[in-house]
Length: 123
Image (cartoon, rainbow, N blue to C red; front, side, top):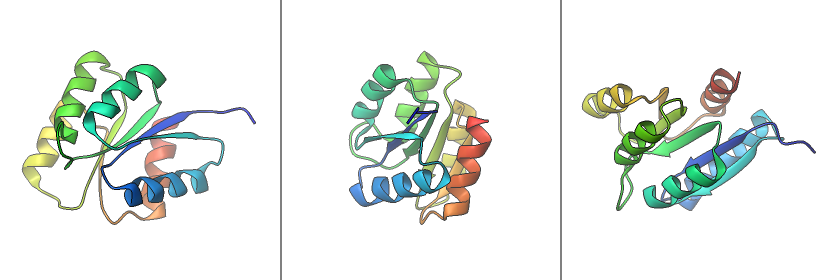
């Protein structure tokens, strides 16, 4: 099997990374899904793996998703990062958008949301 793309899924909840992995594989089983559970781990994995797309949780201990987003966009301004959170806060959405996020989705995720983000950003 030839891998067509890598997607990095970052969430401190193993359940959430598992759900995202399953939704992404239902969209396209050939996608290589890489998981991180902290902002620090995400920064290192992005550098090593250079994924085509990142799903990044906002609220995590240590380096949170917004700080990780800002750091990644400084180093990799063409990175495609979708922010994920359980609470829609206008200030967070504005900060994520101004920092370069290509999308914002709310938990609990629906298959259609993930499929739309994957297709839109890997096209």
